[in-house]
Image: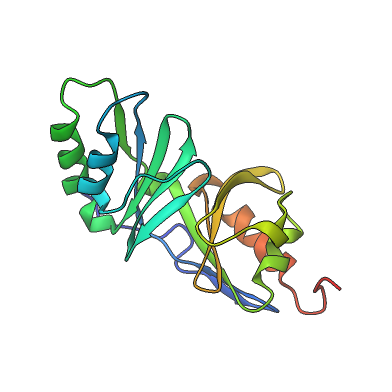
Length: 182
């Protein structure tokens, strides 16, 4: 595996909320429809249980996020991706599935602070008053696809790496001091 390279070199911004690019992080897209035992595969690969619809299950640096009825995003340290893929390949041998390393195709951001939700409220059509820890939202952030969840008093957001600069610009503009929501 090549040396991990952050999408934006760990860029950060301190406004009324703090924005940080936190990659590289290992990510595997796992697609399998109707397979019995998928919960055991996820447990073996990242150590979490299988999440319910629009949920994310976390265990330390590892997580499994529901992305669609037949798709999960496995999140783990970058250095652990190859071993997890091997575990999945062994466990799913003979089953119709797709397991792909998408680590280098994604950018990951943290939005932190007391008003972190306000940064995203300006950009995504989500009811933040009812968004709870453990819930995952796949939506648009302005004009691009993203997924985010609440954790540790802030939010983690995943977007495509190809739009990382645009997303960082959106987040930093939204977090500018003086632009807080009333």
